Length: 118
Image 1 (cartoon, rainbow, N blue to C red):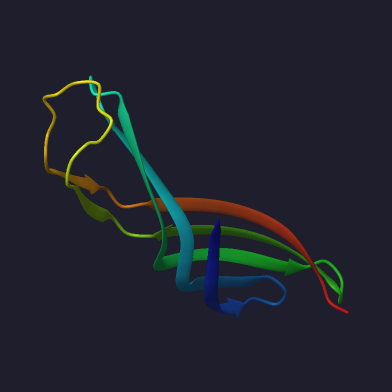
Image 2: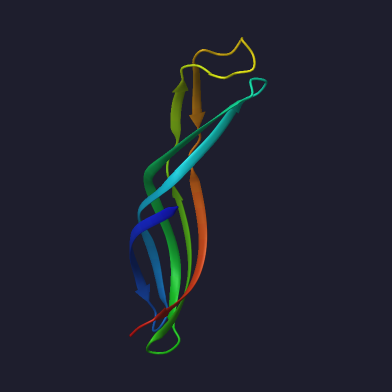
């Protein structure tokens, strides 16, 4: 899952609102890695917190209905982990300690929406 908690600020030119948005991003990240020739696969899953920023435009079609187009970009950061050995390997010669670095978990989202004011 991926969620955001954002604020937005913008300027209006008669009807359309042009805005920038940004804030907190949070999500569940799962990395899978395996050792070739050892028949062993590992998974690491964790909740991460990062940032998100974007821009958009919102236009009111009527007093109660608006349409919106928005683009977001964010990151949930990278990760480093160390494995202290491989169990259940099909070979006897395997690394006893392995350092693994996962790059940043970045995301980009384009969204369109309709808003209804009650």
